[in-house]
Amino acid sequence: MAKAASARPKIAVQYILDQAKLKSVPALSEHVQGVKRALRTMGWELTEFGPDIDADVIAANALACAGQHAAFLGVTFTGTSARQTAAIGRFGGPVGVWFFPDTPWWSMASAGSGLGYLKDEALASACMTVSAIWGDAAEGATRERLERFARAAHTAFAMKREKIGLIGGSYYEVMPASNWHPDVLTHKLGPAYVEVDISQLERACDQVTQGQVSGLLRSLKSSGMRLTEDEKALEVVKASARVSLGIEKLQESLGLTGVAINCYGGPDPEGYTGVLGRCGASGCLKGHALGSVVIGCESDVVECAQQMLFKHLMGIVPCMADPWMVDQDGVLLSGTCGGPAELAAAPEGVSVEAGTLMSLYKVGVLGVCFPDIPSGKAIVARIHGRELDRMVLATGEFIGSDSETIPGRLCLKVKLDDPESFLERGAIGNHYTFLPTSELERDLARVEALCELMGIEIDCI
Image (cartoon, rainbow, N blue to C red):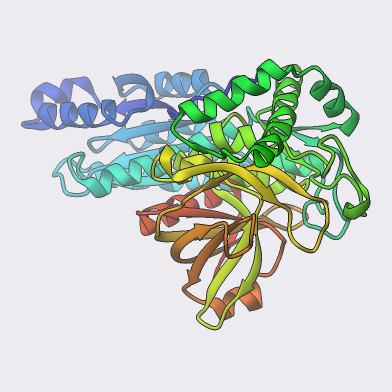
């Protein structure tokens, strides 16, 4: 199986300072040590340089890290370091400048000059972005600015190491799932892309043994999830488990970290049986239950990539679902076959059972993972557009999930903050990502930082 990208941002840090000043300027040495301690406790994969004041040395350090690190952070402590700060631009990717406006050492003046130069350079560069970070190392707000910068850069860096396989081809042409080009996907969002014929999945499923299926079910049960005890439903779960394991074989052979599956397999879902015998490729079970792969249903490669973005940015894979209706109270009800188990508060809040595809289609049932998602705040988002350069983003109150509102399907319930705007401007696709959060303002700021870095325009509704 393809190696997952590291969850730790790989960040290079250049301390920009004349070492002689550490001895000659009162209290400066203690301040520098506090900054270093703060950075070393961020949980990043850190490479540190300096203190240096030679611009050529700083430029060489930046060049050496290009393509190897997610971002390059310059920390400027005193005046007379503007030219040296500007030298970090040789990194060519996301750069940040951390300065200290409440200290008496002219840190802000030099940082401002360096930032001005860097921002001008960024206008002429397709890859370079510039972030200003300020504040005392001991302040929580400063740490969040640092984290926002690092996570945004890490996400863009990690996405270039992802690879999505489209299994079974695109669904209807009018769906946003089909309204994009692989070159745009890779250029804009990062992942490599490969098409996988449904026959390859069929052959992979033929290689799955009954012992492997039983082993997967034992893993689900031993994790603490509630596995159906109904014999008929259990046979359905086993059938989906077999397809999940077939998909895993494709992951291993093709180096996939995400899969977008044509669930129906053809334009007439009622007349198609596919590899499961009921629908095109219901192989979501293991990906959702054990997080073995990021799943994009109904061939939606773009939403698969967006889930990857949120995974790297927030550390969790959101749920992907179809908006179904907005009721008179402004509650958005969305349905999907199943969702990531990690969205539940604990494994005991996850059930593995026989679900069903939407009632419009008579294609039978499939084994799915139903997480009981706790109430809290919610971010609802979708990247869209032929250039994948726009994102609709809505907020609301996550009031729970169940499998009764839409029988046999996972129903997500979000009371939208502005339902009218969502209906007027937000209807731009059949799938959205739903991310529960206990830190709405923080996570919104992180999404905004990422979109600014990646050149994605946000339409907040």
